[in-house]
Image (cartoon, rainbow, N blue to C red; front, side):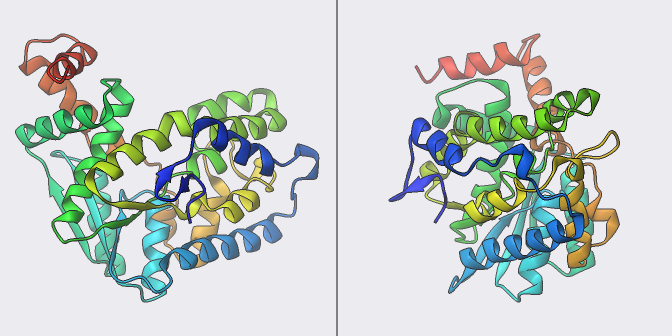
Length: 304
């Protein structure tokens, strides 16, 4: 079902690039009618979600309180699906605070956990062992997925929905802002496609390794081929400006009925919203290291 999975296995890096190359849209053929673009996006998002939940029993949503996962949970609720939202973090996690507020507002079934520093260190060790890497972004983001999936497994939930892909197709990263300098929308469009092609190495490999190790299945509606085509056919002037990223997705979320407060939330990346980066800093200092990388490397060396 997922574009990057074949017979339960992650497809190869070259095969992934070929798949994205095959659907790449030309800048000069993009949709410039905003309302029409929004209608098409609404249909594509709904179709991508419902095709993945057909005849499905109870499942989980990886819930950070950002617009991506909030919209998924909101639509799941709207369609009377049987699901639980899962959120993980350290003390003072913004993601947990927002997740609780959103769950209360929309009467979502939410399970969250605030990890102790000791529990978090065990999560990091397990994540490094699975990934075979101590690269800071991989470990910090991977730890969020690992810990959240473990929380879901306590409820015997083995199918998890997540918001992966929105940053690329709706221009949510700093590098998209850099590509747009001097209002070069063609450069921005190309950067979105480039990011999609590079997702295999940056995101898919990491997440698949963790999911496979835990025996869970990740479902990613925003990575649906039809939705990618639809989103990447929208002119990027509707995705990014100097004040806001992923603009059209936020507007679509409001059109579906999500409150503006939650649709417009400027969410930090997973490793920051969960406070996991701060946690790695604390653990590094606690263990006598001046840098996060040295600390993570010391943990990785134990598994050699």
